[in-house]
Each structure stands twice: as structure tokens, then as C-alpha cells.
Image (cartoon, rainbow, N blue to C red; front, side, top):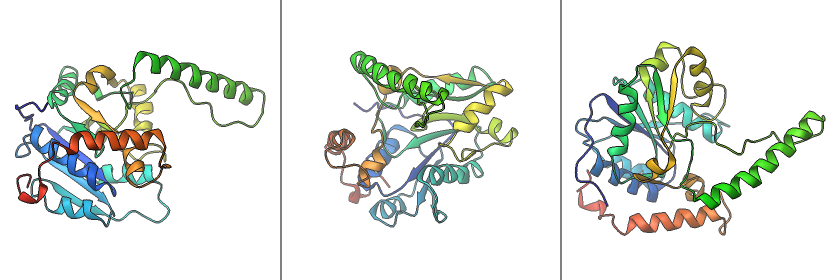
Length: 273
């Protein structure tokens, strides 16, 4: 259930990147407007050339700062996302920037205050977030550790023996995920860094480099994070039909859309504008 008290902190801005996900974007923005005092907290949205109803919906919102971006030719999806974030990084005047995805549905904004408090407690904290992209049960975590762990060590052995193999992928998450992550903008700028570095997933390069300079990355436990929000992992891929119809992520996408759509007001009545 939505908390009535809205998050209101002028030290922080929020950024989202939109790409062809009208249903998710509508739900995400509706929940955000309900949980955050948008008259105090600047909300930036970058549209990556959607050319669909999601862009039309965003244009109808008078409480966001909308940037329409034209991705360059042959630009990978993760790079388009990172470059969009960097556009906002250049514009925000607040000390902190909260990254959200349009497939992140915040139903209790106190998680934002929890994350901000971690930053305010220590000037060396550059980022706060969660490494897990979804809430998993103990049984699922054990099963994942066994299956992915086996693949990781098998591939690592093949590489050591000089055999062809896919890159070993750890059975544990290494980096904070950007579906909900808070960053200290001043530290990023001071060190001449950005989200789209090294042609890698946005922020991963910074997460490798900044700790070497003494900065801290603070992890929020998955249980704490998912007590306050829902996240559809790979939601944009599901929304743009990037998975086969019977893929488990498509099922999760449809289930969570249905859960929140039932409580979504008619956006044509102007109540969210």
C-alpha cells in the first residue's frame, strides 16, 4: 500500500530513461508522483527516441524535465541508456542523483531516505543501491548458486586450459544495479567520470575505479529494497517483445503490470499532470 507521506529532499534529483514501454512508464511515473514531492525534487526523464505512446504520455506531464534524445547509429541498448544518464549528469545541480528504471515501481519512498542517509553519514560514500535485481527466496538463491557456480568454475577451468569458452560469469552479483541506485554527483564530476564509461553497463566502470580512490559503495540488502519497491527484471526487453512469449520474464512482466494496473487511475483525467 502506498505511504501517504511524500519524500521531499532538495539535495536530490531523480533520473529515468524511457524506451518504448508505455504501460510500465505510466505505472512508474504515477507511483513516483504519488510518493515524491515533485515540486521540491527535480525529476528528469530522457526518452531514447521511442516514437510511441510512452513519449506522448511523458510530454503530457508538466512536473518532469523531459529530454528527447536521438541515439547514434548502431548504439547498443546499454550504451544508449548510459549516454542518456550522462545528459542529465551534466544538467543536475543537486549533490545526489537517484537512478530509477521505468520498470521500477516505488510504493514506499522511505527507501529513498534510507539510501540518502547512507550518503549523508559519510562523505566518502559515492553510491548506494542493491546488487540483486529481484527478490529471491532462499531456495532460489541456493539453486542459482549451484547452477551458476558450476558454470562459472567449468568455464574458468576451460579458459585456464586454453580452450574456447564463454567468459566465466560469477554466481554472485558484483555491481550495484541501476534500477534504483543513489549516486553522489559531486564525486563523479570531481574525478572526471561518467555513467557511460568503458563501453560497459552504465556505472560498472565507475564501480571498479572509484573504490580504488578510497570511495565507498554501500549495499542495501535485497529484502530491504524489495520491501519498498517492485522491479521487473529486463522489463524493457519484455515490453519490446525481446523475449519469446513463454519466457519466464514475460510472465513476471505481465503479472506485475496486472498487479499495479488495477490501482492505476485514468491518466486522461489530468490528476497526474
